[in-house]
Image 1: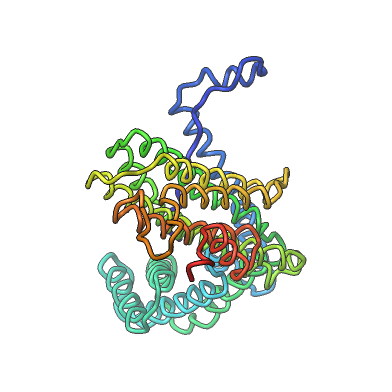
Image 2: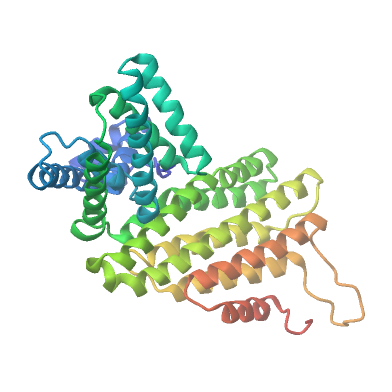
Length: 405
């Protein structure tokens, strides 16, 4: 699982009249507050994994010792914890990879260690051979890691005795099944909350970057405009983490009986997240084109800057539709449509006579940015709950495109 990024934080001090705890919080240096917020976010996201891992290791050890007559079932809890740690990806696929890796490590270790004994170079040899076999089988990262790790366990913890592969594989298989059962049946993650928490480090800095972009365009500040563009570009790894979280949540609602009732809700939320991501890519294209417009000294009307800021506000409103306060998505839609009207004003009104040329207020890059803006706005409308045709019709109607199509 790729390392996850912590969300952006707001370092503004609280208003006067807050509690003593609020004043104490405000008195802390900004780096300290940032660190505490980041750790609190990580605990909310990953805290359940600690419980899952502990429960899985306990059950796997108990089953291995009591029912498999293994006085030291090392592989069972080790594999169980590995499965739980794969919770932010697709557990079934990673379970298979882990078990195949265990088989490879066991097979190579049991084949090599009785011939050469136990020692440093023998351990290195076993690991190299196990990973080579995994590579030849076109295994992924989990399979390679598990094959090498299991080979190390066999080379260092077990005596070089033949005919132990089958019982050790059963030990590992039990651990894998226990880890899967704990993660999907006993203590499953909350799908929507997990996706929401992974969305925080994507949406918060994106909204801040768009607000910064709007202000920079008003001042014709190229440096800040490029900084805003960079802020949107670096969200790629966080979007990848969010996509993996969505996959994990979908797997949970598909397989975990305790979460079956959330299937429809998660399906709607997943669709919204997908189109929010698409909208962010569109906003990045808008920022890139507007930065080019500033470099080439093209005009950028005030309305375009206001439209970008209003689009950022609509993202914040959409975020609140999934929080306890449950903002009305119609508010976000109205903000998006108003932003579209501002872009049309920035572009210039069509001439009364259709045979006359359109008097544009934007240059070449600005016109392309306006088109990208409409695409981003349409994706946000879909994220608000509209279907694709409804969103496209609203964009055409608001942009005055129906008369010219």
